[in-house]
Length: 261
Image (cartoon, rainbow, N blue to C red; front, top):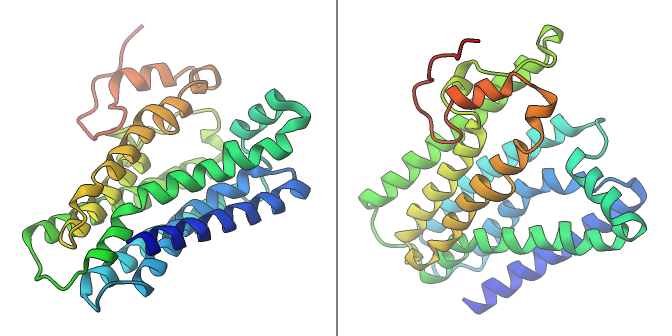
């Protein structure tokens, strides 16, 4: 177990440091975002190659992680291409001044690397404990929850991209499709993906890694997800205040009636 953890940790730190070195001449730390999904794919396959047995569950986890991670990385790469550094990092760069170039290694790249490593513990633990046990109800539950998550992320991203591609929608709030039922279908999908992977990993003896999906859920709800994204969005899109009042933040639910002036 320790070997798998150390190998994955070292690989992630090496990749994150390499990305940091690339970001310096580009003056764009946003390149870390598309790597997020790919990083989990790297961990999943390193864990598979160092697995304790030839069981099917470790392979399944690697395949499910690859489908989710590659799609996410390609989408973020496409979405961010040619748009410069994300406003979050621009604000950090302005706040840190001339020290940001080296501080970004710790507060952006390595920090995300540590979080990535911790969140991926179910993948690593399942590979260590072995995965030859028969299919169980919780495996089916995990695959189902994972599938719901990938659907919400994929459809939500596609609907938002289509909405933004229409010049008539500039400055407007996306409240159609899945976005009628949750303000963040992509974040809800991400949470489902990681709880789904965790449930599959439980069959491989990784029940004790529950803090990993809990941490991902907490971050998306209270730290880097909903809270951070909506911190300034009302200033940029006044109609978003009404959208908040009638639409659930994360978990899908029936939209409430629009407020009247």
